Length: 273
Length: 315
Image 1: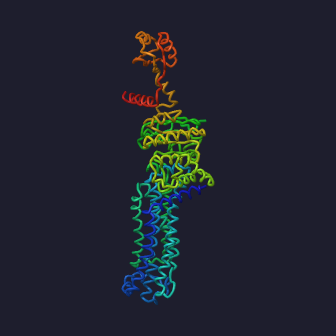
Image 2 (image 1 turned 30 degrees about the vertical axis):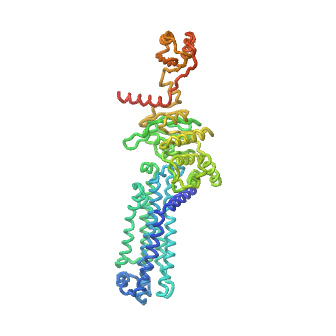
Image 3 (image 1 turned 120 degrees about the vertical axis):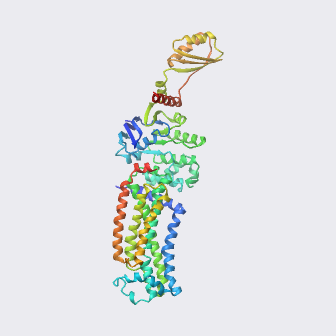
């Protein structure tokens, strides 16, 4: 039987630590706002301001070719500008919403797992009457709870901004498309768990928050790969693809967490202090 | 039943034997001093006794609970002051204590009261809502001590409680430990290489070096075991006559005499010989103003053990 009170206390303590450190929480707020709200809004808006929709559509032509008719049945009838707004806002920027959960989970995870070692507070925690599993679960949840909150809040802000920007062009509210349901509620949580899993594995070797963060940075590459693949016309991130991609990420991330949980032992942790 | 009992307890890290065949018993209410230089195996022993490490050999029980299988239950009954204070510097003292109160299962409705009580007891109430990062080293150590007391543990482990503190802060911490451990019949396991601190606080001491327990017992018992003869300092009303000194030297139980005007120092076979010594002086018409048997300090005991070990190694 898990000691829920202790788990809750560790989560609250870790989140307080995060909130007390501007260097940790500021990027978690600024980066999502920049890459998930401001940047997509500007890019979506640019053609309407500069009248360059046709040129930009050339860039999206490979992607346009792989959009299944069943997913966007009326796409061919839309104007170039409308196609640009719909494709860029609903599909092109979708992988960006996976970078944020990965980033936030790895920042909080690094602070929670490795920061405890770096600040020399781990020993006091290990002497408490809390099991290894309870400490591990609390640390994982510390990363995942704010990640989901930030992911959903960013999505809501994005939906408002994109609809506001594209309202007159599309003739009404057009966002979100069906692919966003698996993206936000299935793939994004899987990616954040993967971020945590990676940090858990890295944390046994990393001595500092920065070391852990840098090592976890590599994980962004597969997500950038998803984005590039779509733009190159190799993979269309529709709902069915996302359910499948999410399932694969869940398997990998849960495996990492399982391996991390098995190796998260007091004796090993003490040896790493 | 002893609170702590170990039999052949051993811990090996790779090629390093950190604790070697340790047999130890600590009784209820004792302040047990575990003395030894850095790297002697003191901290490893504390970790073993709290179930943080699994022994590579031997057995140990704390409150009759097995350290291998009942670590979490043992830790519920123990409070530990670690060598580094292990405090969350971004949190306030109050938040630190409340956090540990939650971890140790202090009843939720009693936490706020208990935090206030402990803060006041350790003289931290005025800075209770300041972030710990702004505290002095001595204040941090007091807070770490307060945290160890937070859940009213029956057994307290103090690992180098005054390490790195300036003399005034160290003295304050020692006074606090003395005050807080004298009440409630609490058992204390004090790891230290500070012999003055141990002398002040401990009823029983164990001396460990390179993982081996060299001696264990009450300081006076150890002294008796280690020194068969004792020195007695005497103050006389005037410098003793030469015949008195010669008479003393002729006594069978006297092995050395040092005279310096009215001060005399005499080495005797045992404490029982003091009465005969006084009788002789009185018979010699000497006026004895004071008789003080020299007590061996923990420092004497410790260094005697060290030199004995070095001597054995040299052979």
